[in-house]
Image (cartoon, rainbow, N blue to C red; front, side, top):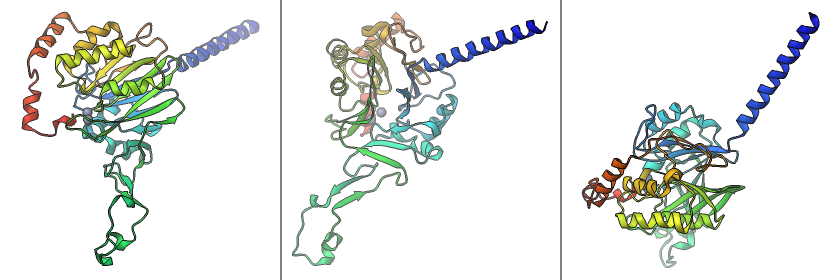
Length: 349
Ligand SMILES: [Zn+2]
Ligand SMILES: [Zn+2]
């Protein structure tokens, strides 16, 4: 009897050990994931939809908050709905100065006031900046009272940030901020956003680059070109491609460049990519189009898009595709151009 009890006890302990070991393996197995926290489309009823972008990128042992959405209350509600602890993130990346990507920063700072934030360096930008005082012309014939700084300027002139107490590090050029984690720094030359600097997140993994983009104002092709310099194998692009008002021909060109020139393996478009571009990418990529509406978590296992699990979402039906195409053939399918004429500054989308 005693022996039997001992046997059962030993068996139970062995079973528990196996359970603990398998749990550990299961927890360590996924290579991370991207969770969309902010966007204007999605199927998750627990998440609020609004124009803007934010994603939690868990990869290479880091938890990175990429952009913060358009409204601090909606951002906070979506973060809560996904049970995300903002005190444990490693750092924040703000892709660019447009409010639909950074208005949720207030909420982040209210929870985690000292978190490291990477933001693009722009002259007199809202994230702060600096210039050597040699930038302005001097006139030594003027009386001291008419001269800047009484004629004795500091060597470097510093310009304030809209978040003066935040721990912001300004990024001026493409920089590897942690092993394998690079912030690509590019500048837009498109009308309406000329000179706007934008950061994109490129994470080099054993399976190729995982690229997260905010709005792609400098052009998605240019951003991918910069990522290819790190590793020619692009495993996944997620985020906004800024083709929301692009005509069909431009969309077709971009889709062909991504698929045929750069051989981007998987695509998870969101935000300002645009509905007709969703349709075109879905058609081109088939099951390598990973649905990424607000609330979706894209697993980044080794087989992302091939043998791995995919982001869940509704498949686009043929009749939906037909509707998209019909709309795309209209000159201004969503009334966006008209709205643009009424409201200048929409180019920031
Ligand atoms: Zn933008
Ligand atoms: Zn945007």
